[in-house]
Image (cartoon, rainbow, N blue to C red):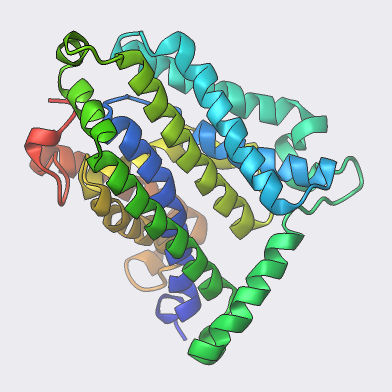
Length: 326
């Protein structure tokens, strides 16, 4: 059977799309709702994934406790980033967030005893020992797979089970975020996005609201990092380079800025392009080697962004009047 017709292939694409839905949802809160131009969002994903893996391997705590602690660490990093920088002008804030993300990545590369260094989390246990941080998750996944088999039979493979788990969490988070954005807190963030001075004149603590939005996005970025770690078993600093943040921006812009329920649509389209293109084995993709297809997908993503900016800058489901940058 052709790879592109395989259920397992599309399950994997769906898992990637679900993880990026959660990641982009955090950016939607920061950028689409609050107007924060965060170009270092991948750092929160890295902090969440690494913190969980390090705690599991080096402390032996239960996975659920390590995961909650990892989310807490990501929030702390968000506060560490926001406290000295959120009063900067938008373009300067964007520059500092890129620097922050690169600092996180280079610390992960160079602190080998803490992070495993450039080799990645497989080296967390030290030289000559292969580390594993997701045994508890695999046990849980097998339990969920057994339950799913009673519903869909032999189709309940590991990837299909992960697909269900990721999207259940992603949709729950979407419901929560959408409710929060529609609350008075979310309306204040939108007013800050539209006119920061007017919001301040009404007695709103603009700095505090921005800091809260940054922290909320950090939580979602960390959760995306956890699922990334669970899906791929081990990872390295290269998995969190600056491109990851711009992939999230692609999803937000593709679906529509400030349109929460458009995020999954953008993520699914992105997932097909990003994860799917490498395995497309029909013309014209079959004329290229696998490694060449990996570069083609980046070109396609760039062309999509350029096309959106030219012909539909508000995204597929967005509204021009809600665009942050006009």
